[in-house]
Structure formats: C-alpha cells, structure tokens
Image 1 (cartoon, one colour):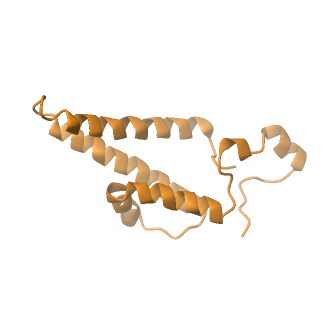
Image 2 (tube, rainbow, N blue to C red):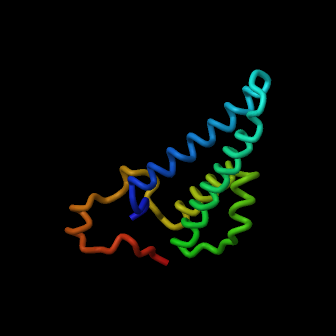
Amino acid sequence: AYPRNSLSNTAVTAAYTVCYYMWIGIFASLGSKEGLIGWGWLMFFACACILGSVRGGFRARYNVRSNILGDYMASLFFWPQVFTQMRQHCVELNLPQDHGDLPSEKEKKLDGSDSDEVAA
C-alpha cells in the first residue's frame, strides 16, 4: 500500500518539516545573530537531500524513470514542483490520495489482493 510504512513516513515528514522551517528561521535571523549562515545552508541542503531521497524512492518503487542527480537538483531548486509532480504521478498511477483512501489490514485480508502491485 502507499504509503508503505506510516511510522517511517511520519518520521521523514517531521525531519523535512523541521529542516525546512529551520533554514527559513535561521536566514530570517541573520541580522541579529552572527555565524548562523553556515547552519542555514546546512538545513537548506538537508531539506534537498531528504526530498531527493523521497523522490528517488517513489520513482524506484513505481518504475518511473529517474536520475539521482536530477532528483537532487530538482529538490534543491524546484521543491514545490517536486511535490506537485509526485502528486501528479499518484493521480496517473491511481494511487490513494490520502490515508482515508487506504484499505485497512482487515479489508486487505478479506480481499486477498497484494497491495504492493501496481496496475499497469
């Protein structure tokens, strides 16, 4: 099923969110605190690494052509488009759009289908 593991997805989302708001906050406070610019850039690149990893994993799982360098560069400079593109891939692959659309474990057992297979 998509998402595969709710706990790891929640952890990755939390890490991305923290890094995202940290780099904005750090760069916003540069006027009052000296020496923070390195930490701001570190948080910015950490966001790109996390999002590039998520994008690469998503593409590998659903056999969407990708390039590691392209995924990272897009995540670094065009992150809103990365989210939009992954959402569009979900629509095109008929994947659930939110957790409410996911079948429960009980429904999967009753149905007998393998949720990891994607219809071509």
